[in-house]
Image (cartoon, rainbow, N blue to C red; front, side, top):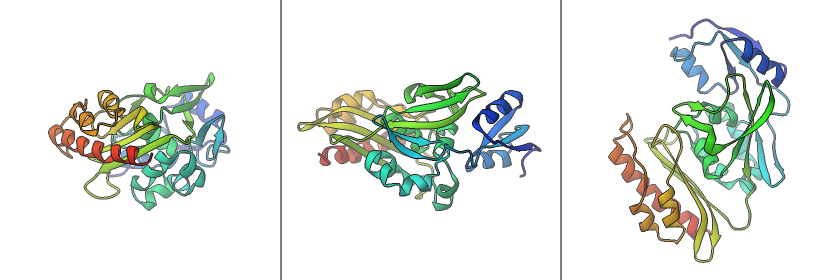
Length: 277
């Protein structure tokens, strides 16, 4: 199938992209790894495609004020190879090899993945696990949205119709930072049946500030807060027993299977968090 007809405009600045979004039924083109597929299947039929590739200042990785700031146009492959990401945002570094395949990582962008908000994608869960934030630019300038407030529903975010996601920020890792990541997929590179991104801080023989963000189990990334509290004491089985998730059946697996796999992943990721002390 081919996409419905649309006009094309290459934006010369973020401000121009914002204006074009205000004046048209438009979609932004960054990496296009999700958008092109939805266009071809006619799940999306904008009148205008706004190409933001090449806009200056949207593809950098830097540490600013104790946070790692990643430009929206940063390619997955750039982040995967970045020493700064490996050292200062190790959870994102762990997730990168699981995102699609090399050809997808070469073109796909971090901002595009966050904005598309696929509930089975790795990066939205990582952002939630790290208590990160999103920078959006619109007609009234820039604003910051916390990850916990950003993901609203199935492919639905807090971005306004005239806003462009321009950067994401996560706290830079400290000496006591602990992270864990695991997912289960039918084939490496496929969307996960269930996945788990986690962060915590080492505290004696246990953990503090535990954040468990599951993906593939709901319409958005989902935190398992009862399990977080149980895991803080270092008791992995207690955390599994109180795992507060209610996955729905989908084409990948039944909700019952997903709940079981969530427990499997919790055991694996909890060991990563605890053994790294």
